[in-house]
Length: 93
Image (cartoon, rainbow, N blue to C red):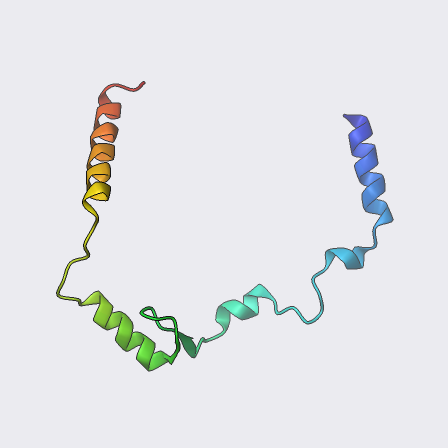
């Protein structure tokens, strides 16, 4: 164990500190978090859209009169997984 720590410390001492830093043209994450995004991609076809168009499309998708259709096989699998989870609460195996 001691040898591993010694080798690691020698390895770290021999490397310049500049290699651990990000490149100078890299934008810090704190700045990216506050950046306001003015354009996006359409959730329907992936084409570039403006903010107003994006908002309109997401609102139309959210208020669709038709419920999402799930494949019957997937619906059956979800049902079986829920039953399995219920059984595991009573019989933990």
